[in-house]
Length: 308
Image 1 (cartoon, rainbow, N blue to C red):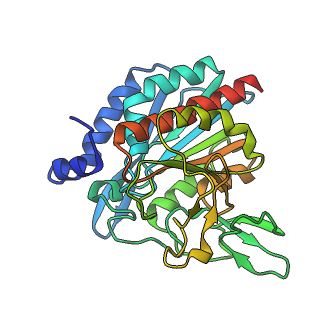
Image 2 (cartoon, rainbow, N blue to C red; image 1 turned 30 degrees about the horizontal axis):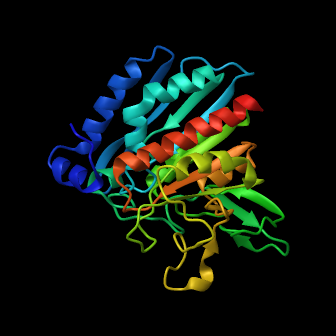
């Protein structure tokens, strides 16, 4: 099987259940690593049933530091799942050298991956999309899902909190349940791997979302610049109304945006992850380059943890 691009994946595996092929190859890779194992959960939609896979260490001690990686929340953004499949051994070896344990959710939206669609096979994106993990209470009691670049709020909650009665897509509900059982206080870094098919562009480029002091990622971005252009000081409309430029946020000189958007990385940042980053490459970026960007971020953040 050749993973050479989004369109080729879609065309080649429509009739072959590409999620099953992906998982079979992923399980083969995990079996090569004696310290990792997988568990499988079931997702049931109106239009089909799919597996949801979690990769985790066979043993986690209370003092272990955990590096969390997630990918594929938007089904048409395949570079993250492919990065994990093709480079799992490399990622594991680097984590082990850095004294880190791995927990990986390689394909958060398997049914969307199957049909090459942003949301799930039922076309259910929930209330505010399927990367929905937080609600913020503002002064005065107003509840919002996105603080944009303003880190001002009274209290935060999981979006699955029963007091809100929010309808979440099936894959998101399952992810919430699994995350609540994880040793999240031990997570020192979290990376969520994406591709941007919303921003209108014909160029290969990368940018990211992160929190706190963004200057600490400058060396990672400098390394990326040797291979791919960085969207620096650029208005980005992905995740907002792309027809209204007033909604856009501007990246900094390293192509990073500070946005508390209620996403999975926002959640893990609130739970204490020192580094919590959403990695983006434009839809025009060749798959091999997008995987390289993901790897540079993964190993670069591991280096930061080790040096710290």
